Length: 402
Image (cartoon, rainbow, N blue to C red; front, side):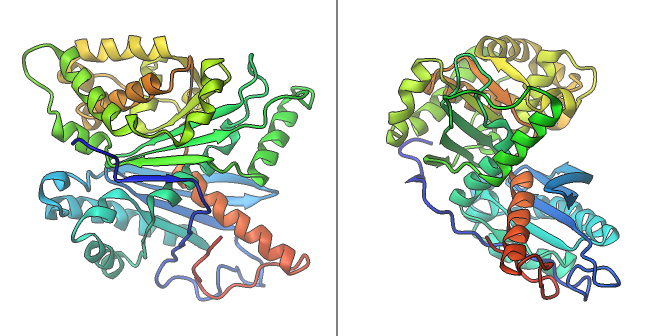
């Protein structure tokens, strides 16, 4: 893989296409008596994972009631054949059927279900989407790279506040490392001025709410058609030889993809001055964080929002290289499913950190699903404003849009 990235654009208003489930409740998401159930579902079918999040929304806050994630490797072999393979589609369908059952059981009122890079580029991607609807009742929308980047930034909104840092952060780079692509979004932060509030937990919650109401939008973004699955397939781990050389080959591949992008160069002074940080959202990055903490079992509450330094990342990467695949399988925050992918994700992170040098990395165990949920909440808020305080009027399972 060489040459310019397939997707390079300045940030603009992302076109949004929401999807709704086929069938289900006939009352448009309202319980008996006309009261809205307020149960939302966000479904993300990626190149490597199938993820579902179900939450209630009350008082401007989401409360997660159920989450499901399964590695399905839908994009396995896609880079070589140009199409989704039958075994990969079967794995994805099994996971999606579980998601459909959970959605039905919870009585979900609104859903956004999306598919990303694998279905975007596969010759049979749209045929598979139609098959999913026939066999599960779920209607997935293939979203654009721009919308994927926008939703990932939205999902990480509460981590995009650098006023408490020293020095105050004025820019952030959100990187969402997927199985088949990596979305990078440069966000200018509202740094400077006095930090409001008293530092209490209540104050922190209010600040998060303000961030949610005023969603940050990327000033610049790029989608690289390289993720952990296709990068690992292109650079299989050698059984013998220098593992560091193998890792550097993956870093060089990503560097070539990113090196020609200059639209965000106006923010480089913030990185040079230590006034910027990277927000990393991916299974590979959260795995690095878990190993850095020495967790005996992965714990989202300890990982999400964690601050790491570049040197911490390098220490974990060197350890992973020394362990080999068999050793990585025994690591509780990696396991067998990610043992052959985690270093591909680490190589993408390392390439970005070298191109956009900064000391601080903030780990995000959140992203696209949370962005999908928030996009539905924004829709609900706007409907209420238009209805002058009345509840939103909805047709049964209508497609939602921002």
